[in-house]
Every structure is written in structure tokens, then in C-alpha cells.
Length: 594
Ligand code: ARG
Image (cartoon, rainbow, N blue to C red; front, side):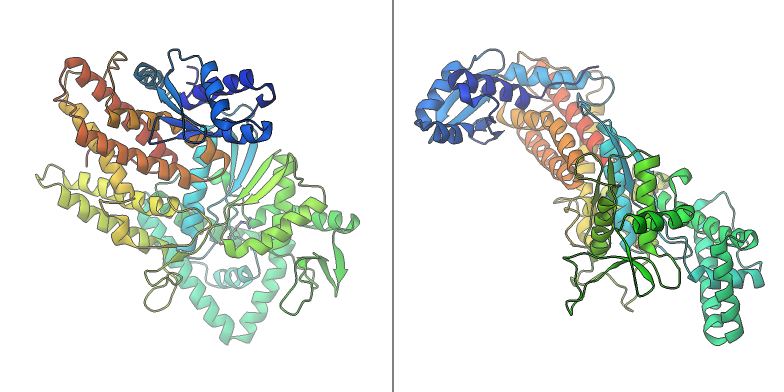
């Protein structure tokens, strides 16, 4: 089914032709249309045009109005104020537009695909091997997942990359220890239970890490053996790699259990960690050195930047290869760019990474640009940088003992709180324990995701569970309740089915709701293009608010005529579908009953 032209786009087109018919030089000018509370839309574009043409804006506006063919779409258009145009849409056109969205059997609500999709590689959800995932890993996963869904929805070819930290000198110590104590990673738990296996995997890794560390710090001979092991690892010694692989596999069991708790699909094939670029590192350095992008400085291979200086004014270089020959984070990221651009054929590279790594990415991207791997036209890289998760005190979120907070603990607590809310709301005791648990997880995880996604990524936010699971205000629970309430009305309607009746006049609350539903398409398109899920979140919150007003003002099942009942049920259902689709793009479930 074809996409549906939104009402605002149709009005926009009408106005644009009226403008150019009035004033030839206005061809292609933007009428600057927006929603207004005086009429359905207001267009302010005439003002700038009048200024340019040295014409009187009110007169020009009047001429434009005369050119507008007030046909089926525009019911009324009038000049207001200094030369604004106030536009009212015909009720019939509004209902017919929503009916067309409703009839889209692909479930896309008539949202168009982007005309020229490209290939985007998105780097997100990148925890580190043999380490606990903490609150800092939440944002990358949640924001990345939403951006993946948004882009895929618009038709973009999306390739996911989980750039896990699976390489580095710390593995020498771990491998050596496991080699000397081979049964430390053995399993006891039931492998079918992901959560139990995940927990056991992490506690094994954690215990092993701590004992290995103790030995490393106290036993000089072990320390020497561990250091030699790093050399074996880097040289690709098969026995050493086999032990290293055990750490990676064990960690993945744990990662998958956390991502499952986050209700997020992460595919093994998309996990390409730092180690995945080992074979490219030498060549990356050679290319950079040959092209003169990198130079040797005190034995290291470095890239310098005019505008990047340390506190004393000395240039701070990007070190691609250390003086001991070792490669670090920068060499891996530069090699990953080559892979993503030349093998995966990406046009856009997105990195969903903490803002505290912005300097690193600035230097890496600039280096790649100088090397000709990136440019400003068709192969671009962008760090979707996110701010810090803060505690209630406004400082970076820590436990009372000052330690970083484990992500699983946080998620478990959110689910516990949400389960309590669900149980409390179920006053008639209609839900079984299993249902309460399922809803609790959907509400709790939704609350965490929504709180993260509803603030723009670059800002810090406070992790406040009380606020997150509150039924009032800008929370996912509020949106989920709006959805569940609609489902309950549709169930109560029984045999009476939603059915648009375009001949009916619309009440104020109905048209406000309907015009907002129509704006879903452009919201999704903009959120995807700007990698800004918070815009979709804000849209959905407003949708639920407008629905609440509609519900208060317009009786649905007790409406005056049978046609009105059907039409209002239709408005309910198209709102529900929009909520469901929009929340789905944010990775949040909409339970049918709450
Ligand atoms: N593993 C890193 C961390 O935990 C994030 C990796 C980000 N991605 C990248 N390509 N450098 O901080």
C-alpha cells in the first residue's frame, strides 16, 4: 500500500503554488507552516517574502489567499495579524486522511520510506569482556536500539556493530591464570535459563578476575608469566587464543542475559569487538604513515591537530601506535572505519558513545578524513554522544559505597517497582501472578528506556525510579496506560467495530487529536533523519495527552449516534495503533491490559 500524504504536506503544496502564482520569484519558497491554536495551521512565510519583494505583507497575504483553491482540503483561509495565514482543514479531509492511514495493511500507518536510502553502520551496545555492565552501558544500548529501529523503519539499510572491549594487555593476566586453574569457568547452572546462566557467568568472571589480580600484585613470577602471555596473545598463538576465546564466550553468555532483560535483540553476528580488526592494524598504520597523515614522534606513530592542545598549550596527538609497538583504542577504531567504509560500503557511521569520549572521536574522524576514508559529502561519521546518568543528588550515579552501579541491579529494581504499581492498579485482582510479572517487566524496562529516550541524548539525566514509574507526567507508564485504556474500550464495544464516517463534524478535541495522529509520519521521518528518538518520545507523550482530553470531552460508547460511536472508536483505534507503532520504535512494549 502506498504512503499517505500528510495533511500538512498537502496544505504546504497548495500554499506553495498559491505563493508562486502571486509572486513568480516566490517559487520554491517555504510557506513556513505550523500547527496553531488559532486555526488548524498557521503559515508565516508571507512576511519574509513581502520584505524581500518590498511589498505590504497584509496585501500580499490577501493576494495569496485569493489564489488558494479552497477545494476539498482547505475549508477556510484568512489573513491574520501582520500577514499570517490561518488555515482550517475540512472535517471530511481530516477523517479521510486518517482512514487512509488506518487502512494501510502493512501497519506503517501510511508513513513513507525515505526516497534514497543508504547504508548506515551503527556502533552501539559495546560492553567489555570479563567486566560487569554498569549504568554507563545503558544509554548506548537503549539509544542505539531506538535509532536502529527508526532508521530501519524509514527503509535505511542498517548494519549493527557491537564494538565490545575484548582485547588488551589485561587479558595476559586472565589467560595465564585460567591456564593454571583450568576449571574456574566451569558451569553449574541450568544452561537453558539465560538469566541464571548469565549471572553465573558473570560471577565466575568476577571471581577469576579478582583472584588473578591478587596473584598478579603479590607474585612476581606470575606477573612475569602474565606479561609473556600478552606477547603470545598478540602473536596469535593458538593455545593462548583458545583460552582467550573462553573469556569472550563466557562474557557473551552474560551480555545476552542482560540484553534479554533489557528486552533487546542483540545478534551474535553483529558482535565484532576490538579484536576483530587485529589483522588490519599494521596496514592502517602503514597507510597513515605513507600518506603523511601520521608521523613518528618519540618512537610512537602520531597524528597532530592544530586545534587540540593540552593544558600547557602543547599539542596532544592521537597515538596510533605506541613506542613499544603496541596498538590501542585509536588504531582499532581507525581500522574499523576502513572496514565499515570499504567492506560494508557504509555512507553513514554512527557511534553511540559517551560524550566523555568525544575528543577521541573528534581526532579519529579527522584522521580518517585526512586519509580520505571519510569526507563531508557521502561518507560521514557522527558520534551520537550521550550525557551522564546522574543520581538523585545530581552527581554521577554511584552506590552508597561510591561504587559504580551494576546495570542488572538497576533493572531489577525498576522491574520490582513497576510490578508493585501493576499489582496495586489491579484492584479487582484480575491478573494472575504470571501476568503481573510479565506486565511488571514490560512497564519497568519501558520506564527505564523511556526516561533515557525522552531527554535529548547529549544531556545528563537523573535516574529517579519514583518518577520513572509514576502514572502521571511524561513517563512510559502514562503512555502504556493510555494504550491499555483504548484496548479496554475496544473490547467493551464488542460487536460494534471502529469505522470512519467522513461526513461527521469533528469536535475540537477530535480534530486536535486527529491532526496530531497525522503528524506521526513527519515526526518519525525527522527523528530518524536527526537520530533523535527524544522527538518521537515527545510526540507520543503529546499524543497520549491529546487522547486524554478527547476521552474526557467526547463520550465514545455513549456518543449520540451510532455513526458517531463508530467514528470515535475509529479515532481511538488509530491512536492506539500510532502509540503502539511509536513505542515499538523506541523499544517499549504496549501491554493490551494493565
Ligand atoms: N567498550 C567501550 C566502553 O565501554 C565503548 C566502545 C565504543 N565504540 C567504539 N568504536 N570505540 O567504553
